[in-house]
Image 1 (cartoon, rainbow, N blue to C red):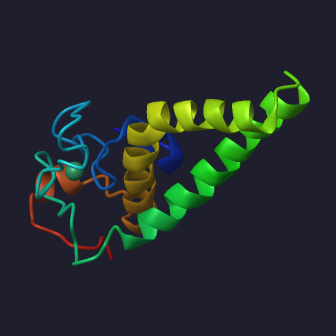
Image 2: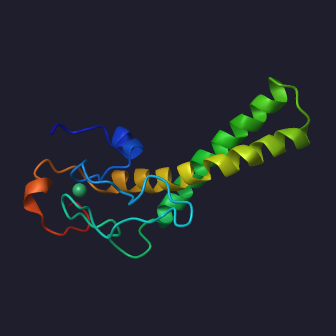
Length: 132
Ligand SMILES: [Zn+2]
């Protein structure tokens, strides 16, 4: 299988090492949105290579959501000529609707940034932490 772009792979929420296994157990789980398997079912890549691994994903989530919500408020104020309170209200509704998307996407992007693609990962089946 050819190497997929890591950004596209992150959007598909696939394992960064084999690009086949799913990062999350269910596509949408409201009671436990961060429910990930311990390792990839295809190549055995650990999804928690070290304690606190996803701490950096929090910063990614902050960056993406802050600029996104700033854009939402800007559009409400300048294009739709809403009051500031109405624009903040719209932003809160959009924030509630996109919460799971940003939460999972930041984890997916974080692990795809730090673990490299390995075309032979499927055959090796060894348990790996980082993909050095
Ligand atoms: Zn995998």
